Length: 390
Ligand code: GDP
Ligand code: MN
Image (tube, rainbow, N blue to C red):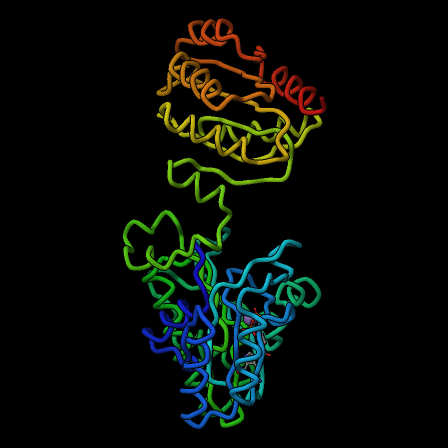
């Protein structure tokens, strides 16, 4: 689960990581009040920052430094409500519904500091680079030696010597080293205590008066650990998520939208992956990943259909079920009822195996629906691809 920059900075603050002072605003009035306050405190500049769940906002025009209250108001007006396009949003962009109004910082250097769970080593790895501010992916691709890494032993945690080593590699000197060590210590504590999967400070800056600050922050939490973080769950902003995925999560369906034409309804994540593979193998492209789970009921099947149908790219529906806990006849009954209720006119192709498969096939055959049944996964995939091509 992703959160906004202003929320991530709030968490960093709690862990003693220095971040600029600022306020979140959802209206121009709130933005103006926040900017007034920051200027009245003697700040020479105020930064207006679009809050969306994507990076690259600066390049897309979503981060502006204002030297006056008038400029701040103008930038807030420009940015709030804009359709912000960055390399991470895709061409459609994301509508800006919140702003962060922040005290301006006099930047000396922009660096990069990130932490992520590294699957290969099963450890948290800290990454640091002097080339911060810009696309770190580009640095990693073109100049991987410019990224320094420290793998953290889970039982020991981040050692002070590891933090100091990274601080030296960042080219920091004097009192900045201890400040950076403080940032990393706080970051590590926040990372482990909130069950983060990724945390990125880009840029971590030094200011002209010698301070080390987290100027931007991105956090991503492990969804499987959210049950033990009620407070974090509340930070979820559904307006930033794909509406179909939000809809699916309400019915406990594991749905990820893709850009193909064959909608898939499958029970079990492994079978769902295999289904997408075999569709590709048969020359088609899946419109989604959808795992309805082992014990799907009629309500979930209906919800799943509704979600699949609201994707306008879909030309055919491929239902691939191995009946175990979910009996095939139960699923077939639910599919027929849902398809009739929702008036499904798209071709439906099924591959059914498992408990009560004969009853299931009979229910489908007698339903009067425009269904085809493939006897093997490959045969069903071929039928689905042919149907999708019209
Ligand atoms: P991103 O583009 O989505 O990663 O947004 P960032 O928060 O990283 O901001 C992008 C860039 O805006 C930074 O790399 C800085 O160069 C610039 N920026 C952000 N805040 C300030 C500020 O307080 N002062 C100055 N001078 N520049 C800033
Ligand atoms: Mn950034």
